[in-house]
Length: 367
Image (cartoon, rainbow, N blue to C red; front, side, top):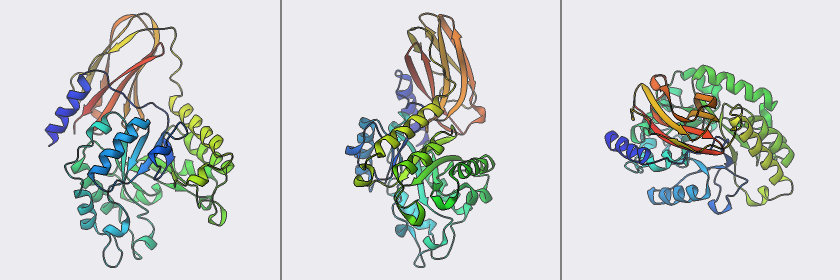
């Protein structure tokens, strides 16, 4: 199975330049109807019920230009024991419904950026008075990685709870959610990111817009803007999801402007330092070699004239993991190298930008 996946990725990645999702932060609500997607939202969280719905969903998301985090297990009640505690066996059975479904094409083009297993393992009121232990969470993540080795996997939890289980072998991100009861949003964001540095997990922020205010009231547009921008401004943020879609809520006066501010903050923070290209330049980007790899990769590219160029490597959730070149480059054939030996196995994108144009190639890093 692994060989088939790698073969497919190579055929897609070397047939020509492929689309790599832009560096802006994906932001949007849980359960967003695809027909409501537009320029306001760049991301969403969805829970397909079966493989047919998953295919339709991902194709629609791709057309809409969104980047999506999915949940495949469904409601927690579907994988609880009779006493409401977490059942790893039942959870694995839920994921097995999708076993054999190939998510690779949507991972490769940046449409599918994560798989969140379930929410709130740290809250015993959800699990019959019990907690879901960090080691059990990592075992659940191992099942996802077994079926879809290239799909980043996470859990809806603050880093503070997950820190005790570090280092993780399979879990890749935490999805902490902010409400005003967490205190000052800036302090909360910095605390989460500091803990992330210790547990080795990435951070996909979430904001409870429908009941995250004082006395569990909905957030006002001004609060959505303030809290959302505090998270979107952080370059370490991988996503900003909002609980949850409500057409009347998101249609209220002032909300569109608040969401636009969050989107702008997410783009500014995730493209900072790239700098504008200097002068027009045609470009082409060769296939990385060797591909797949476990070590050093050679990347060749051509500029038709001197230009300010940036050559960088991104992971599938849009995080820049390496900058290979950034500055004025001479015309003609150029090469750069990247040592992939220190990164997690998965799909990465090498992206070249110059003269208002860009090109991208997929690379596979093997375990």
